[in-house]
Length: 253
Image 1 (cartoon, rainbow, N blue to C red):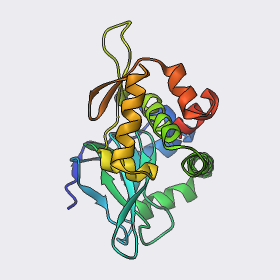
Image 2: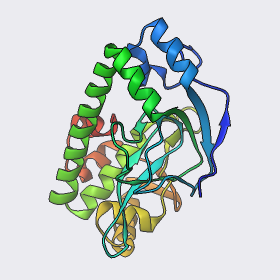
Image 3: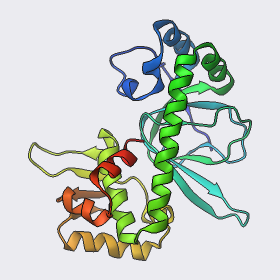
Image 4: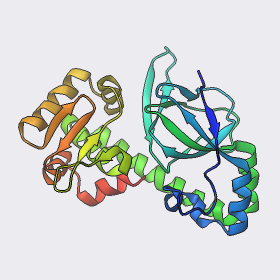
């Protein structure tokens, strides 16, 4: 059930906006941002609510201000499979399409900078500099998705688990929680073990065995089911089978 709550708008060239420099907004002129400010609104969704269901009319697009959204797709036999995760500053929704191809669900409490889709499409036509930035962002996202597909198809379960934990450790400040100065970072993975296993193409039992192995080898310390203290990031990278540069590129999009 859609439980969105509209509050004050967040858009515009505002120094207080924590995602401004990571979104297409940074490409807009003052006039463009003033126009965007008139059509964008902040919406909040509680964890577990469906923001947009697969097959529904695409009415809203925009940027994630806070929280994590999971994208899932239903198969012909009715099974749901997680096909992607969206983080703060990521763009959600489908432009230039009448129907949503995926279901968008709030994996955590989520705040969105939401815009009516037809209005945003008209805005892009009026401001090609923002449309150009949007094209670049979507191409970067496509590259990251292809790299992730290569990891999930060609790597061991341990490599996939290590990669996912590293991506969550880097993806955004609100997912990468720190304690006092000098302490190891606490990584928040806001998904159930079953959801993580589905996303990685494995079983919850195999996932748990790999997490336990990382813990026994002092790469991470298990705080609880969704929080891990990252003890050795270099060793986590080694377990992933990827270079730090490749992992950071995946985590950036």
